[in-house]
Length: 378
Ligand SMILES: [Zn+2]
Image (tube, rainbow, N blue to C red; front, side, top):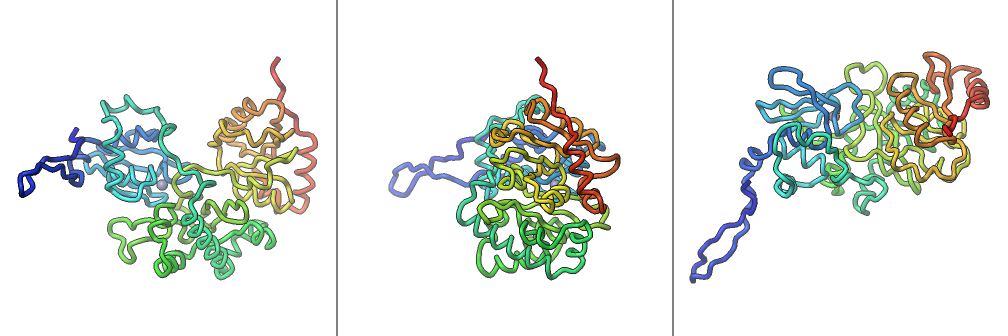
């Protein structure tokens, strides 16, 4: 490896001096093949063509593998969140680094990959993950601006507003949860004027366009999506974006890169009976019923961070009745023991569907009353 990028040079006068030179980007790329770095980041890939590999995208909540690595071109692309680039772009995005130079430094500071697959499985535990509950002041100011622009955008966009109302979400929940809509222009325009573009790109709210896309240099990640924020202390610390109905082909939910926080944390912490809800709109239905509910926004819930639920006596679980939901229920039951109390909804019906039925709320509370706690093994 070409690690110490330092050269001796004779300065006029005869004193040797050490000059630091920018890293040789081509050499770094050659030394760190994209596929190895992607797999080392914990992304499981399978072959999908002579030079292509496919897997779940690490940069958004991906359920259908939409992330591709082309080993001939040494490029990756995600058809869900539109992340793309080479190995340095991957590292920059995955490690939340600001520049290609920082990505080079990060790569050359890590052990060189020995052979393919050998390192895979060593997931990103040692790597820095963004903690959304620990934003800097600059980051929080950008998040606040984004939250306000999105909120404004929802009331201006009749289609998006009708979509949310059509899912049975009352206006008071739209307001109290700070739901929004990203029009794809306002945030970029606002930050271009006021500053903060780079911070917003680093946070994953803006992204660089794909090759062939013309126009402005930065695009809004959530453009054209209904946006649901996680609010802590009255400020949005994270967003998840839902594509409106009728736009098949686009990934349903996207999130910015990094660790997913619990949605609705402040509604549930410290409560004796809490509701763990898999789906985002199901959670909004629970909020409309004034339940102390939080959403895991999917089934990949970090079981090593359940400490905040210690005061809960019962954790009611509302998970989808699919394979992933059943597996998650098993894991949660094992971790939460007698606290865990899964609720089985009627076949083919999620909580949001139930919320749109006239007797749905009453039915849900009947199911809650008869739900059985996990039996503790002696
Ligand atoms: Zn993606």
